[in-house]
Length: 619
Image (cartoon, rainbow, N blue to C red; front, side, top):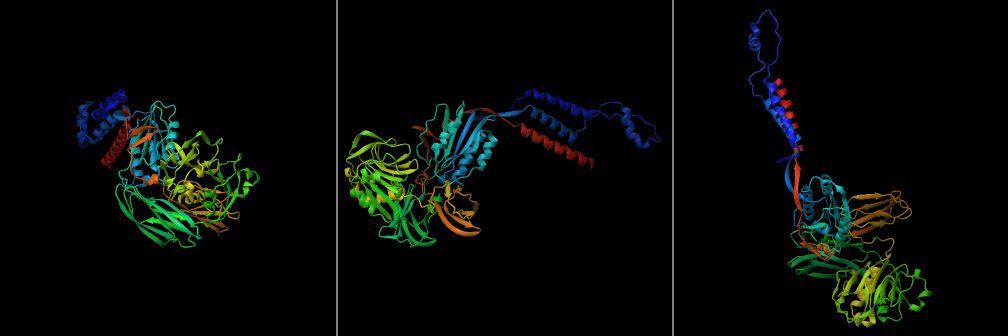
């Protein structure tokens, strides 16, 4: 123990003064009385005439001496030297995504992450500041930059977990921006590592540490749950369910299907380690509104054991095919139910009204002014938003493709062979779903509000149009690109904001969450933004006018992210090509931990004891 103000020990000189008060005799005055018999003892005491008396031990004396000594110690500001964070500022990135609900550590990974964050905060030096960021589909600052230890601890106590995916890239970018101008700064990523490689580059002045959470990867989850109309009977629906085993050992389960709460199908599953199984159910009851897929056997993550689909009635879709001549595409489009297909040559496109169509397919052609609609683009020319190299890539082979993406459901893209492919550079708004090395073979994304699917090759220069996967791909693409019915609510991801469209006469809109809680809104002539979508399950929207129900809607939140269901805890992070080991090179430095407040608490306790003892003796 050391003292921050050792000069204050001089106050210990007050101890003799306290003892002196107990040594002094009481000064009395002589007084003549008629009889001194009863005052004999007092007479002897007065007769001594010495100012001092023998010190008599007293509980009050001991308490008062201890009180003076403790006050002196408190004023001297005692402290211990400990190892603390050598930082002016720290940023804690706390993973709150769906995988952090796993119970392989008790009570769950998120609680363990919060405990790890508290330990970091407790070891901060007294003058350090920090920021706490909750990371889900978007980063959320729980405590602004410059917060002290107490404020950071309060923010951690208030943090909650979600079912959203992890956007750690955006969170790291935010953390780096908050660290600008800090000389000694450290970033702590507390997570199970269930997110892709981070692309941010960390400057040398910032130290990044990874604290992994989790011990087991044993989990089985539903990763795809989709519905499609029966081509031969549009009133019927086919369900596609994909279940993956992310554990290191083979496992079995039972998959059950429910329509509006009633069981209509089941299938036993046996999955190898790291394997998957795809199931199609074509016996969905006609007229069913909501279907649920459920895995019987529980595991360490419950959120991905169930998924829901809201089956909306299809509407006719008008598709314009702009192509010189593409028999493969024409046949695939005409096979789709509830689709009205129209064809026009590229040189005739200027004569049509784009507002009459819901979806466009451009083959080898793009207009100077794009229609305000979604589009499937084949063999595109170079534009100001799509860069294409001057040379073609000959005979590329599919090296990877994202078979979990809905666009490639049931599609064996690895069977596609190419003569030549255009050398396209993927724009920032697009994702590459299939590629040959660094050459994109399939892209999708949102280009200024228009959803696009791009195949950068001529169908006639490949065997894709001849494969059974091609009409399936076209059906997937049309379903993905189809504009939403304004009366329907699409299935958002956990944490997304849902825009609810009230009818003109509606004056109250109620949303019932999966746990039964109801939140009411009063529309103000526009859509209502509902953002409390953290829980998985069904959300029921009731629109009312003067207390009477006029419309009801349902939407579902599912945890079907393969990245979140893959619970194998990561031990390293790849940040901009640099590998960060677990909790590496944490900078510790000697720091003072003053404990004078506890000394003052002890003083208050002694004062209370003195008061009690004095009044007890007096009574």
